[in-house]
Image 1: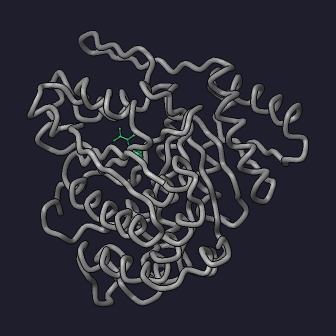
Image 2 (image 1 turned 180 degrees about the vertical axis):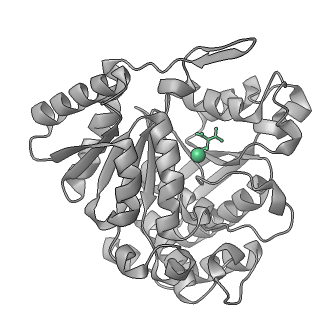
Image 3 (image 1 turned 120 degrees about the vertical axis):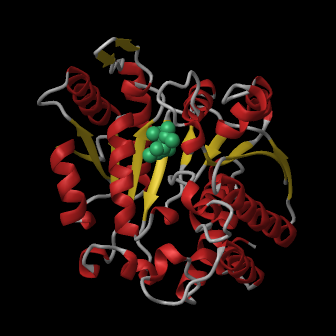
Length: 362
Ligand code: IPM
Ligand code: MG
């Protein structure tokens, strides 16, 4: 197949990790007969520096007409002045919103080779396989923000339609996995959470009677996620709870550098990005972990291009590279470590080997 992919490297380590994912996608293209065309555009701090705005109109236009968007990360100390009128993060929020990407899929599956990097006891991590579905275009992120001298407010707002569509997406994922769905809210305090709970209960009862739904309060979820991570399969939650819980969940996998994400809406175009930030402290040193972005590229193959077998081959290649001990510094835990380029090359080398999944398809 042929596909147009818009690449938004962004700031910090963004350019390094997106370059790694492009190299992997090019390998997939050459190996399995696809042609991927890449077009780079500006977002975040890099866009502010060049154009004064974190999401230039031409970036959004390009993203709208692409088959998929691969994104690095945005932000950094250079643009963090609290009094600044524009911030890099606004570009990211604006493009998610403009493309209507309300469902953010964040899979968390600890890999044996990375268990040592996790602060959690290994026996708690075996068999963990969680899919967090974070609502991405509503809630406190997008409500009215006000600052009046010494007081400030951020409005958290949701309507039933916004909740329904993301719950549907999560419930159908649950159906294709183990059939269990956990909805996370703060219904003992927040009105938006009480609506969230009502709508979720209704959607699952009416449309997914085969899915087992449980509700969890976000504070106890934060504890259970660490104490008994195996108890969870698909977790659906609102925007900010999902942001916080997935950084926490990354510790199950051993490093933020291992968690990919897919942001999806009604169509097939999506944004694929690692859940980590721009890591300005290590930018430009060639030591960033590229695995999360490479795994995000696998999600791109699966969700935007319908190339599920290719996606599985990329995931397998990363898994094999980790098994072979190709660990970046964040994963090494005292063992020898490699840089971005060597980790990427290891994945590319694995992709040259026969991929069982692909043979099954042929
Ligand atoms: C994420 C990030 C972003 C978010 C920031 C950079 C705006 O933390 O994708 O998780 O809060 O959504
Ligand atoms: Mg985050």
